[in-house]
Image (tube, rainbow, N blue to C red; front, side, top):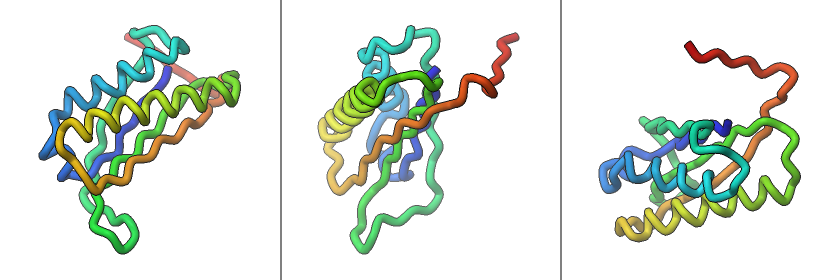
Amino acid sequence: MPHCILECSQDILQRCNQQELMQHCFDAALSSELFTADDIKVRVITLDAQRVGEIDHSQLHIQLKILDGRSVEQRKDLSLRVMTGVHLYLKDSGLTKVSLSVEVTDIERASYSKIIF
């Protein structure tokens, strides 16, 4: 845990390296010290269509699904670390007019199932 899901406008992926974008998210999540490297999962979902208000903005929404039990302070720190790491990468890639958001949601431990085979 966590599951880092990057919902991303196509134009962002055309201007950024997808692997580097995922790495920046991964590194930021790891820097929170809430998870081990082996537990962090990152994936990108490309948005076929999207709209941000009346303005022509690209969109990147990052959902961080983590097992419940973390404090509000830990979740806020995680959110800000991921926001900052990805924001700096996007800016360094020359992107402007991007709506970037990060959401941390809890996964209930009691009902979560997982198998690795």
